Amino acid sequence: MMSENPPRLWLMDDNVIGAGGHFLELASLLAGAANERGYSSQLAVHESFDENDSALVCDPVFRVRRMTYWSLGVDGRSRVSRNTLGEPIGGTRLERAWHRLGDPLSRRNVRPATMLQRWSEDFQRLVRQWNPQPHDRIVINTGDDFQLLALSRALSELNLAHPLTIHVILHFALYEGAEPSTRAKIYGEQVNAVLRRTNGHLVHLHATTEPLTRQLGAVGVKVTPIPYPIRPPASGDNLGDNLNQDQRSLKIVLAGMPRAEKGRGQMKALLSEIWSSHLETGDFSIAMQMPRQRWQRMIPMDLRGEYRRAMKNEGNDAANRLEIHSGDLDAESYNRFLDSADVGLFLYDPQRYVARCSGVLLEMFIRGVPVIVPKGCWLSEQLDLAGGDGVIGYSYQSIEQIPQLLRQVRREYSSIRQRAALHARKTCDLHNASNTLRVMGVPDLAAFALRAS
Image (spheres, rainbow, N blue to C red):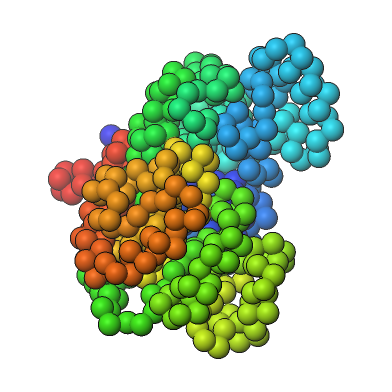
């Protein structure tokens, strides 16, 4: 029998340090869906979080963040399996010796032993404070193999009246290419060892893409594939309505702060390729997010004057060819930025995104925006699922192909946009946050309570 108090769904993400960004957006969407399904929700974040305008109730408790630092996946630095104290126990004798020498040389706050201890202690403190009941659920929004070590350590030391039910969402690829790497195989062994030591608590693993599910399966880890949740656009009934067949210029949007895996190294070459042929002609304009510092490495030498003039003019050059958003955007500004897109362009590294979801791509999809993406990764797989090249966008093998693909989009824009608008509705239905929780196996207690009444 359920207690009189509503069941609770607690979200945890040590990566959340402030307003804005996909980590907080994911938590916000899952919390909203949890409320719809009859749960009260709360989010545990990094201790540096001090925003007062978040709609979520946030507990700033975690002393460490970015647990992927010591992951065995492609985004981590580890080469060996470890125990819950952070000690190297796998790999060759030489690899273990290298880590035993190198770990103490890391900054104290990112040493494996320190990170595991602190995350585990913070998790335990939260659980004891929250006093979980049988119908309550915990969701770790951004999990990985190293964080699972910390979770295992925490669970081994928790003696509670009821076992915990914990859902861990995995986002990051294990390996690049078609075959599992040695590190990926160690990843699988370490994760399965952790799942055998949960002290009676229930731990469910979920992956946000089918390719990641296949990668995990290839190293013996069983997970449930789930749709990554995306917030529907405010004008949900008008998807694709900003189509204008007579418009002179189409806006190309590169959304998100440029990082190495998101094409930072490609941006300079792209601008050189399309400035005179596509932007100066007025066929297109381009809008980008840029860091306040070190933007020079992404802007060609002969365009830096244009960039500076645009920044002096509130981010726009006089001819409206270049639009720059400097620094991080809050949620409202970011969504307006996406709403302005006519074409979504992705310079992502296909090896890093071979199994990794791009929330930005889904955000373009739900707006009915045609896209251009790299081949050989999760992004191009989404185009294939929508019908292949030319249906809602195009994929490229090399950056040199992008100018021609932009011309094709320009010629076919009306028909591509209409098909993209139809695809947007399917994307909204699949990637609804309530559907994500349903696929994860989180019961709809609101529907249960309604039937019981």
